[in-house]
Amino acid sequence: MSDYSKEVNKCLIGVKNGKAGSFDKLFDLTANHLRCIAFKHIGDKCLVDDVVSEAYMRVFKYSHTYDGEISGVAWLYRIVRNVCMDFNKDENYERDVVAAETAAALDTEVKTDMENKLDLFKAMKGLDESDKEILRLRFYEDMTFENIGKELGLSKVSVHKRLKRILSEMNKLL
Image 1 (tube, rainbow, N blue to C red):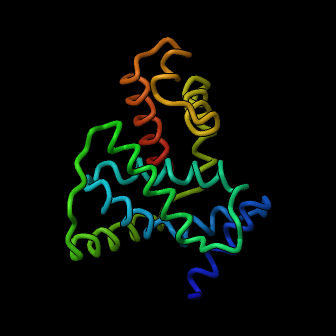
Image 2: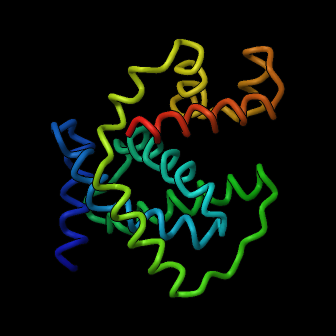
Image 3: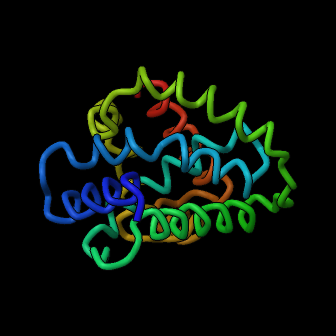
């Protein structure tokens, strides 16, 4: 197992156990990697941040299920892949084949961008209650856009657009 894999596993165990700073370290270690994976599966540079944001929400939500005996990198990869499949299904995006040079260029751009990001949870504090409710229903209750819309009296499309706007605003704050 590589040093990178060991560090990712250590961070995931820390997140699972509620250790302070573990989520930040995990984010710093893996954000570039996860963005490249998302780009390969989605093929739309505009959606990469949305996919990665949702993936980290799922990591936080499901960290209690992580088994330290398995590869944390593979566990994260499956989460990102599943988020991409959801995006592809919901948005009806076709999977593009991405050249290795494009992924390398994205990795460099992402690395520069991520150096200036703040803690994810600080960004959530700035949201209004209705936006927090949408995030809670989507990521903590694991509800579909359609079910959230029914509960809040909105259309599926409206919920998706609002969630996309919320995640975009959070990315700007990060």
